Amino acid sequence: METDPLLFVSGPPVYRHHRKIKKWIEESTSIFPERQLEVEVKVESEVKTESTMWKRLNYFTSPFAQHVYKPLTFQMKYGESLQGLVDKLDDESATLRLVDGTIISIDMNDIQEINWRGKPFPVRFR
Image (spheres, helix red, strand yellow):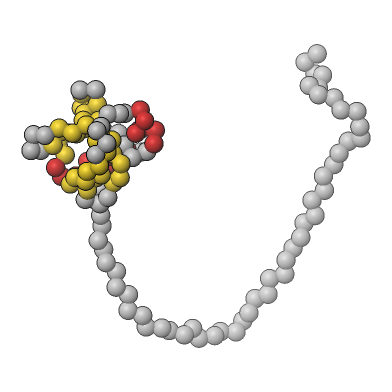
């Protein structure tokens, strides 16, 4: 029984034939001078490094994270705490939707800690 095929189909054997096609590649022995263009290129090497807080807030912008981790408590540097969700994230600011429905925009540097269920949320990046 070990040598019997798992599936037996009654019919003639099937063979596949692949034709090999060789393409003729024509090589040119002529040398053509290339036109040289003088172009002045200005490269601005402004490298934007994303802060850890921006990465943490970016994690909360996904619909899954907004649904699962609500409400978040944002501890501000000046002592105030805000409860809500991250609605939108910009380069320097974050737009929060608070529990009472108010939408505010705050500077990312003003956020000291992000808490969920009373404990600091672990650092996660996606």
